[in-house]
Image (cartoon, rainbow, N blue to C red; front, top):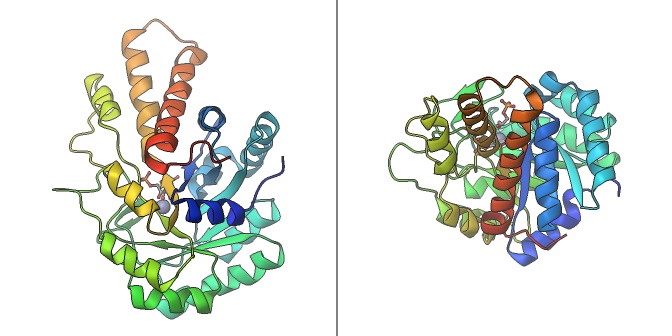
Length: 307
Ligand code: G3H
Ligand code: 13P
Ligand code: ZN
């Protein structure tokens, strides 16, 4: 099966009131863990690659891993660039065969964000590639850029942004943030704002970044074996389910995968100090990735059985 565009995936997700998981990948075990979970759940999925992942693994390896994933599975699978900073990086991955890119102009003023997004849209659409853009800003760290404060998406600007930039999906800021420390006190998302945005853009796919739920079982496991991940808090899963019913078709998940891998490795090292065969600790780490992804598809995204 060739790589898929998100168009059909999102159309079905929108009408079905569920979301497609977009999972960040950095190496072979993560790709394999995600694919085997999706296969088990019969769920469509997006694998996404950040600039940091591309630097870490190398674009050739990433693309070849995707080819392997496609050969091994019969699932609708889309390959997406996460947080493309400029036209050049978007062009490079489009030329390498990605089916979807994000141009993240969210740190620019409104008019400049429209301009950079439009430039990518013109190049991408000529080649049948999907473009996600972002309006509003999430707090947290992404690709070494640190943002202190959330700047929520203005619902009145969202429709104008989509119309003038031509983007195919829009990431919105409603209170989520990247990383493991999303809320200091009570978790809160501005779901009313999400509904207002969704009303101004009927049928249009919205995207939620920073949407890991930070599973306590993995935070506790990491801390039990020497980790120092104190006070980590993610987005409550019932809020994500509600978002999926309010126009959110793509939910980004990276931190949950990182935590599952790290907690499992800590446990393996602590319990088997004499082992020095990487396969013996990477296998359970890969299984932990599958466990998290299956949990998400079944209980948070609602995408199980949709492929
Ligand atoms: O949005 C950020 C993603 O979690 C990717 O993180 O840039 O460290 O690969 P990264
Ligand atoms: P998390 O840090 O919540 O997993 O968000 C990932 C993300 O938005 C990637 O773009
Ligand atoms: Zn993100």
